[in-house]
Image (cartoon, rainbow, N blue to C red):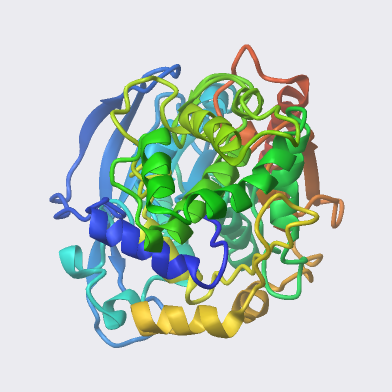
Length: 495
C-alpha cells in the first residue's frame, strides 16, 4: 500500500510513472483457462510450488445487466491438504501481481503442514493478469468503474464458494482469510461482509481506520519520524534539516548539477524537478519505515538488516555542517535503499519500489473510496509542512481519472470504528510500521483481537520464519495459529 503525501503528489507521481515507461501494472493478455504447475524461487526464501488457475468472474457483481466476465487468476497448493474437509487458508490479494504476494507471505507456507491446510492466493481484479477488460482495463473511467474493494470482495466470496463445490472433499472445509496491508483490510472486510464464507480472518498491518475523521492525519508520519529518531543520533533531525538544504542548493544551476551527480540520478535535475525530488526522498524514508526488518530482505528493494540503522549511520552530523555536507550524508543514506547491492548504475526517481505493485490502480482506488488523509507539520515529524486539502486532491483526481473521491464511503460501507458486532478477526500491527496509525491496536471484543509486535515493521508476521526474528513476532505467529485452530475446531463442532 502506498501513502499519498499530499494533494500535489498524485499528479507528480503519476506523471513520473507514465512518462518513464515504468510498468505500474502488469498489463498482459490473459492466459487461456488451464492448469499448470509453476515453481518460483526468491532470495533467502524457499522454493514454493503451486498451480496457476483461472476462474470466470462477473465483471459486475451488483448489477444484473449482462456485462461479461473476466478470468481471475489464483494460485493453489494442496500438498498438505490430505483429509476431507481440512482447512483452507485464503490470501486476499492486494494491489499487485499475486505471485509477488505469494512469494512474500511465508507464514502461510510455514503453517500449512501443521494445519493440514490448502493454500489459495487470489489475485485482486485489475492487477497482475486479472484484467476485466484486458489491455484496455485502464483506458477510461467507464472500464475502471469496476475497480472497487466491494467488487474484489465479491470476487473472493464467489471464488471460495465455487472452489468448495468443485474440489472433492472441500464442501465443508473451513476457510480463513489472510492478508497484509490493503490485503489485510480486505481479509477483515471479507469476514465482516461474508461471515458465512470465511470462519475468521488475519488482518496484518491493516489500516482499516486510516480514513477521514477516524484518526489524525499526521499520525502516519509521526511514526515514520519516530523510527528514524530511535535508530541513530540526530537522524530524524538531519532529515528535517535536509529540506531547506535542498532548497538552498537547488537555487542555482550549479547546485542542481551537484545534486544530480551527488545522488547519482539517472537524469539531470531541473528547477521544476525539485518538488518531485523532495517527494522522492520523502517516499524513500516512508518505505524504509515500512520494511525495517531485522534481517536482509528483498520486499520493496534489496536491503540490509535493520536498514534504518544503516541509513542513520550516515546522518549523525551536528548542526554545524554545511548544506552540501548534510546532503552528501542524505545521498549516502538514500543509496542504502536504492543501491545496497551496488548494482545500480544510477538512481531513477520514478522507481521507489518493486514493479510488481500496481501503482496506477492503487492511485485510482485512492481517488475513489480509499481516501486516506495524510498531513505533516514539520514539528512533530521530520517532513516539510503539508496540509490535507480534500478539494485540491479531488480536483487532481478528476483531472487524471475523471472521478472524484467519496471521503466517507469506506466508513459507511465497512462500519468505521463501529465493528464490535463482528467476530473472529485478528488485527496484528508492528510498532515500527507507520500504517499502525490506522490499525486496530486494542482488543475490540473477545473475538476481535489486536496483537501488537513492538519491534515489527509492515506485516512482519506474514513473512517466513527467520533466525533473526524477534521473540515478539515468534509469539505473535504462535498466537495467530492458536486462534486458527480454535476457529477450525469450533466450525467442525457446529457444522
